[in-house]
Image (cartoon, rainbow, N blue to C red):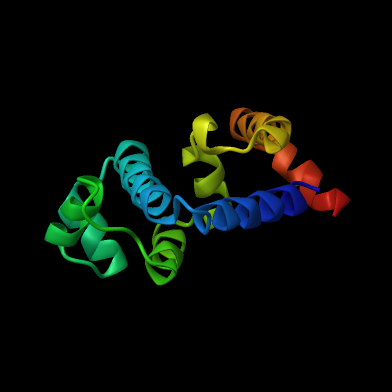
Length: 130
């Protein structure tokens, strides 16, 4: 259930990034992902870069909205920080960038993630049910 929800949101966020605001959305999303990694794991630009194979300078450019992350970079972040890309995208996507019709689904998925984070035993329940 949660996996299907997260996969759906991952696809919708990627489709949104392909819209007419593609470049701006990718830049903003990339910056938000770097900020999320920095805040969550307390890694500086050099540490983030080392973990995903990019220079500190490039991470800084991404954070300063001058460059964006590639799909390959996003997958490296997923592996390095052991957090699903779909979860990262769900957490960093700003409400203003979510189409109105999808906002209720994002809200539901975010509530589910919050519950799983607040009570890790629920994850075991979800996994048994799948």
